[in-house]
Length: 277
Image (cartoon, rainbow, N blue to C red; front, side, top):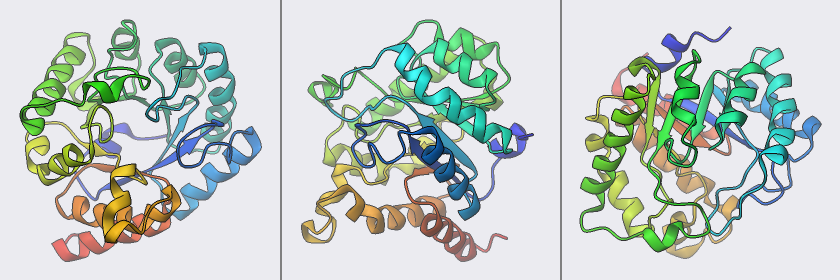
C-alpha cells in the first residue's frame, strides 16, 4: 500500500512515468492502447525505478479533441486495476471527476488533473472526499484552443498567480494541503519562450509552498535544443534527461517522463552532486 505522506514528502526527486493508453498522444499514441501492453509497460517502468505510473486515456496534445467519458474509462480502468493489484503507485491523468473516482476505486492513489479543476466543476469536491494526492496543473482552455490563450505580459508572474489561485480553490473545496501538488503546465497555453522562462523560474514555483511536478518530457519546445536535431518526440529524450538533472538539482518534487531509467540516473547524479543520500 502506498504511503502518500512519504511519497509527497520532501526528498529525492520522484519519477512519474507516463503511460498513455491512447491512439493519438503526441509521442507514444498507439503503442500502449491495449491493456496487456499498457500493463507490461507500466510494470517495466516501475522495474526501472518509477515512483508513480501516470495512466491517461485522453490525449491533451495541442489541437486534440476530447473523447467521451465512457471511452476514457474503458481505456484506463482495466490498466489502473491491474497495476494497482501489483502494488504499483498509480496516478490517473484525467480532467473528469467520474473517471477520477472510478480510477481511485480501482486502486489509483493520485489524480493528475491538467485543468486544475477548471474542466469539471465536480472534480475538486470529488477528490476532497478521497484520501489521494491531487496534482493541479496551470491550464487556460481545452487542447483545441489552448494555444490561442498563450498571451502573457509576465509569464512567470501570471502563471504563478493563476496556479496559486487554483491551490486556494482546491484547499477551499476540502483537498488537504499535504495531498496537493502543483504543475506549471509546460506547453499548455504556452509557447517555447514561455516554457523556458518558467523553467528558469523554478524557485518561484518552489516558493508557492507545495510540491511541484514538471512535465517537459519530449515536448515540442525541446525540438530546437542542439541546433534542431531533436525534431521527432523520441529524439528529445536527451534534452529531457538534461532538464531532469537541472530540476532535480533544484530540489523539485517530481518530473513526469516517458523514459524512466535514464531519468532515474539523472536524479541520482543530481542528488550526489547535492551531497544527498
